[in-house]
Image (cartoon, rainbow, N blue to C red; front, side, top):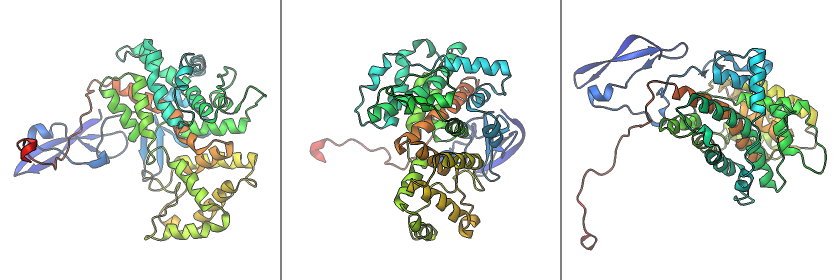
Length: 431
């Protein structure tokens, strides 16, 4: 817990109450209201918890006004440019960048756990052939607790460690299998000679009938997508994981809960919504029409992939993602893909329009990641599963941090009740 050096005074019905104020290492001070109900008999009201700190954490810090995202103190643009996903995983999990020996050991442990239990193949086949990959992932990840009994005891530090490695290692395999199942192709086993991102692309796009070589530019772009989505502080899905964890649920159930929350279109579906918007625009010549609609306050149309709820200036992840988008589009070309042509031209026109500059509606990470995934050949149904795969390490890091907190309590939000007061039951014949 951060230092408490001052208090806030709360007055109710002529009575004063002193509330501790905690000063974090970064960000605004936090008023501690834990004893307010016991002292004053009132709750606070904060729908969406947008002004409430639900925990103290040392993992990720966001300053939306300044466009800052730090993982364990390291700026996201530095990590995305100079590091790679598994090194960032180590950083999030353990708090510091690894030595060369530590990184090699960590990468080896992850690589050796990429296969899933063979009986889980039958579990996949229990889904309808047209099941959405996210539905499959929610079910399969939740079912991991039925296959890996030796890593479900949250009170055993070693089992927590094993579960963490297993989830990071097996999530690409599960996501790729969900994709293959959805398109009717055979599952592709992981390969230990490929790095994390290249292995995922190989499992998604290779087939037994012919050789498939992963282009290093695509693998690097995939790795950056993983890195830029690794953690994002106390968002809806992370809060869901923490809430599930507070009950003592096993790690696989907690992560499955996070995946289910991420599936919501207001959370993990932003890059899919962006591609759907580009499809709606259709052709480059229609872009001015849609830009005009976006400016019209009476028109419900909004440019998806522009601006961000948290970042009020610019999304620090977008700059690095744009570099990858440019590299991928140069490699694969946009001439034969009208949607990618629309995306590039929409970006150009929006950035040149004073309206969007004044309102700070810049392209965000979802805009560029959607473009990259579309160019790689992923259907929009796979965008959110890839997001879930990327975010798994963030969920696990938050889960482990919460379990080590001596002040851990089961989550129990309060409410502002507006229903009927007590009334007597009336038998049905007298109603």
